[in-house]
Length: 253
Image (cartoon, rainbow, N blue to C red; front, top):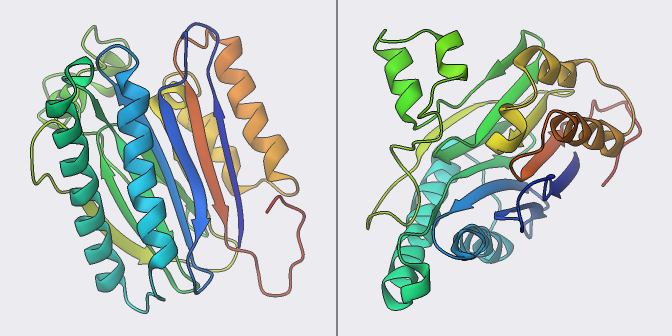
C-alpha cells in the first residue's frame, strides 16, 4: 500500500485547526485519519490534535486485525476514548470550553477497509465500480437533504451549511458511524476535511480513480485548486492506494 497525507492552512485562517496522518501498526496495516477542529480561541487545533494523537498512540500498540468486526470495534472504542478525553480536557480548561472536532478514519488491511466518522469530514472510495462517497455528513443540511426539505444543489449554498449535528468532544460516550467493505488491489481511498470538499467538486475528486503516478503531486493539485477558489478554510487530505500485486507504480510512501 502507498499512503500520502497533506494539510494546508489555506489562505484566510490564522492557523491550522485540522490534524491527521497515516500510520502503520506492528503488523504493517495502515490507519489513515483526518480531523477538523473547531471552537474557542485556538481550541480547535487542540481538539483535532488530541483526537489524532489518541488514535495514533493506540494504533502503534495494536496487533494485526483479521476481521472487519475486530477493526470496527477498535474504531468505536478508540474514538469513544478520544471523545471523552477531549470533553474532559475542555471542561478543565476554560479557554477550551466548547471545542470539538470532526474525524474520519480508515483501517486498511490487505483484504478489507473499516471506516469510522463523526461530523462532516468525508471518505471516498474508488474501485472497479467507480467513485463514491462512503460516509454521510452529520450535518444540518445533510439531514434537510435526507428528509427532502432541500435539494443537494440548495445544500451547497445553504447559510447553515457548517452546522454539525455530531462532533467529538460535545458529549460523553459518543460513538462514530462505522462500516467495512472489500479492499481489492488498485482500490483507492480519499479522506478529507470540508476545506477540500467545499471547494473541489465530486467530479473533480473522482479523478482519484484514474490517477497513475505520484500521489504527492495529485494531493498538492487538489489543495492548490481549493486555495485558488478562496482557501477560506484549512484543507487536509489522506490518500491510501492498494497497489496491484504485480505493480510497482510510482507513489509516495
